[in-house]
Image (cartoon, rainbow, N blue to C red; front, side, top):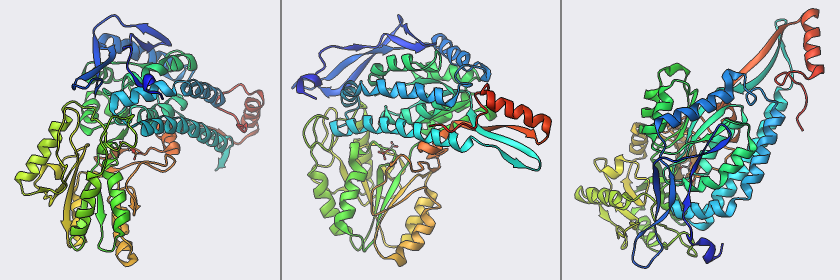
Length: 524
Ligand code: G3H
């Protein structure tokens, strides 16, 4: 991308929303979208454009469109042949690829993600869609048969659940949102999708592709505030799946709106406080390098980020010295600056929030170990390495989701296991060490406290074919290319007693290919 292409020359005014297969003009109130990145020498935030500030009435009209397309399971999309749904998705991903540059540009401006990471987010999302298509074909091939037990034939497949309300997070406004949206759509559900607060304009270039690729009402896109548009949609009781990646407060608030709790399925990716444990015999070069990326890639704004480091007291001095130097050597700049590691924070109040955590920790006895730690500007605060952190500090208790690194010393590993067990979260852990006598019992316990133990490496979601989930308040359901297809569907089947009368009907159904559900064809 050239410097000229990076500039915001024209504002992007999103003047339509997608409903019932049409891009409908929005003439009501709008919200301005700002970037915390300054375009001029003297700092000022940059206006990027506007989006509709939709209201309850319009949100309910959009809901009607999704319900109409599902049509109580009778709709074109939920009853369509798998091969035809896949063809629609292939069409979509082809059109999406054409929008790579513009989406990446807005990823950088709206959420401050570095250029290489923004391209990675886009490409990873395309790969996710392509892998989903392949996995769905496999799922279909495995179902293209009959099972027989106790004289009953069964033709078992997975069917859609209904209407999905899909909400994504600002840190991966494309990838994580699509990790919900794409499996939900391809399994035959119809979807209402509200882009994240930060990372909303980058969806605009894809609206036309959604409109062109899927039948009317399958994908609907709304804008506005959660409590004004998402809450009334939930209150209607017509949502079958709440798919949300974000924080548990919003997830609970939305669930509470739904009048029929047992009908509502949940697919949730929530907050975490993944610990890094550095054992006495850890390879410090490796541990430090992984803890740098684990704590600070995308400024620590990842649910999988390492949000607390437990360092054994026998190595704490050496670890802290080298780790602090490495943190201070990281380069801060705009997303398109060369070799940049740290970038502006998209949330306007975030530097002050992080500063508050630092001050609270200092008042309770922690020190900033690195020289540049806590240096604040209009859109950033340099990561502070805080030591020693104790349980009473806010930075110990809260998911900071930003650039600050609490470090807590330990002498007995038992204490750490207790702390992890007592935590509200249970997503992943990073374990740095070598001695298998020490590692083995730790692994055996940690796998029961979290859902992924990363040996000598930072925590991460990928590769996306692996299960991504969490215990306690960290997740509901499992996401991965394969698991997501299951999360957004239910097993449903046709059963028929083995007798000549039924068997003839079954054979006719299969040979005539008149049913879209019943098929033993191998999907190429
Ligand atoms: O925000 C949480 C993301 O799922 C993290 O994904 O580990 O690929 O950065 P990542």
